[in-house]
Image (tube, rainbow, N blue to C red):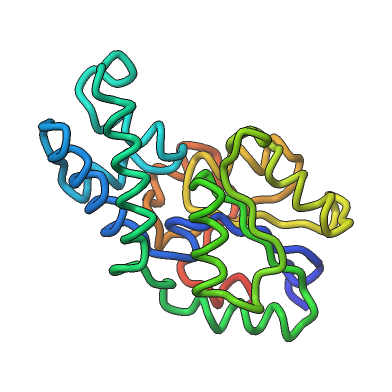
Length: 216
């Protein structure tokens, strides 16, 4: 019996945790920047911009942020391009598929909560994790984005779980704060968009280097 096995519900972040989406996010970001004639960004820049939803991503990508008159236009171009190109290079991280299959084999409930817009969250989960994810919730006007607890609480409501049954798994400071705001434990993964020092500085208490460690 390991210390993670007593959970019944495993709630995962999507980008940087289950899926390596960075190259596609960077491509759509730079497509939008070119379309509105603003400077493009390196993949490493985009890695730092992601995590708080697409509006924040574009706010961070355009000069002067939300004061930039081209923001709405860039955001709309990004959304359209990303919906068409979100599968170009995106794929699950090594070890994720065996982890999800094993969780299902043990009778666990698996959910995804993301600050990615809801349509993209649901379609990516359907495409990659069909039959393995019970509930997927993304950003919409009805639910406040992470680190607000709303998406996680909505999962718990839908699956009928109490806080004692749930663990949250993510790769960023947003995820650590989300779990804290929900009063549930957080496992921070080291294969995502943020490194160990950054996560520790933002309060990470449990770190894993590969997906199988979530079961070990």
